[in-house]
Image (cartoon, rainbow, N blue to C red; front, top):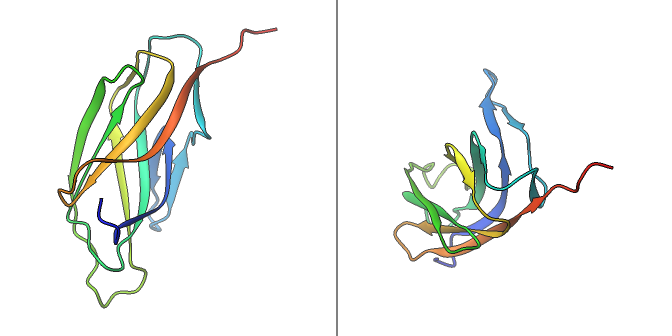
Length: 136
C-alpha cells in the first residue's frame, strides 16, 4: 500500500447508523476479539469502519477482504469513493463496509486486508474469533 495513504484507526461492530444531525451511532462495537458460543455460527452482519489520512493522496477505490485462519477469503468488498477537494480541511476519509451475513467457520486470527487505489493487498488489521467460556 502506498506510504502516503495511512490508516488512522479502525473498528468492527454490528451496525452503524446515521442520525439526522450527521452523527454516527456505532452499535455492538467489538473489542479485540469476537466471542462466539459455538462454531460454525453466522452473525447477521459485520461492519468494518476505518479512518484514513489522505493528506497527500485521495482514495478513489477501496477494497477489503477478510482472510480466515484456514486461508479462505471473505470478499473482496469494493467501494468507489469521492474524497473532499484538496482545499478542504480535515484531510481524512472514513470508509464503512459490511459483510452480510458474516459466517464464522473456524476459531483463530482473522486478517483484514485492504487494497487502496489498486495497489496490492496489505494486511491492515486483525482480530481473533474465540469460543466463549462455558457457564459456571
